[in-house]
Image (tube, rainbow, N blue to C red; front, side, top):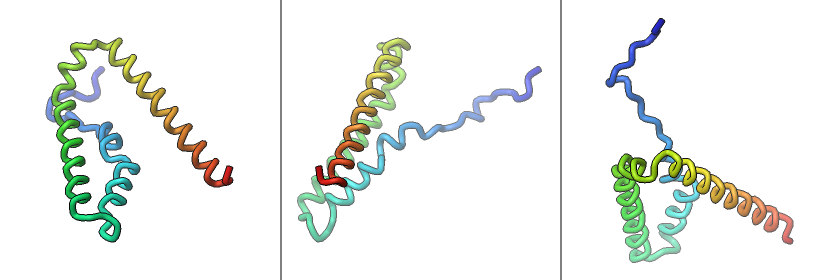
Length: 106
């Protein structure tokens, strides 16, 4: 027995990529780089240019994601996902250790 009929107009958008594009660290970096008391106009323009460039690269990669998925296949996507998870975990561990080191003045 089917309770719900699936239709194409019920497609949901899951914001999975949003945290990787605009993470708290990225937002903090932009805020610090464009702080009006510390940075010049050229630094602000360069920061805005880099942000726009990163958004364009993300847009292109998301538009090509279907072709990339077809090229690397499911096993390639799984391998890339696991490797990126390992890199993310190592960066998190490094940040925790650096925070402990700084807190205890080691």
